[in-house]
Image (tube, rainbow, N blue to C red; front, side):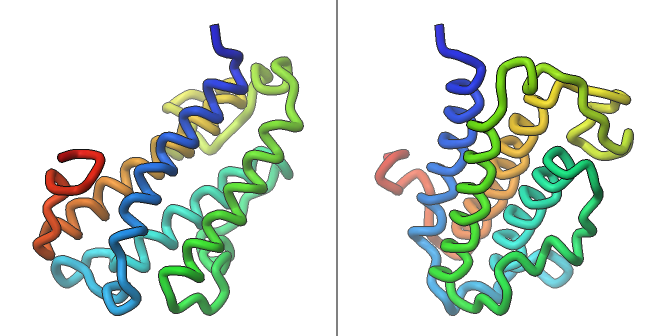
Length: 164
């Protein structure tokens, strides 16, 4: 039976593997594109993934709120897929280091989130490990959006290596 740490790392790694597949299909000139006006751009989707991970980790590590505006500066002035990718990898390395520093008792300890934040599951407290699951869920959600974006541009995911 896998340990709690192995399950959480496996979930994060699986979500990241799907994102990596998408990132590998992106070109710098695609970053400002969105399927229609008012939708987040491809760059915006990548920034959303990183900023939310940073917000979640600051919340659980430091017990303080980090505004989205503050968190969205994680990539600095990144203007290429490679720079954004590197920034996402840096945040994930910090997340995994923090996860690996925690005991099972730490992961099972109650953690508070704002009740209207999806990580809270609508509950006043959840075990800390739920923050890591929510992080993976959030990344998968936006990765799915990026897959749809690529498909809208004519890049059929059913023809990609892992799906074909």
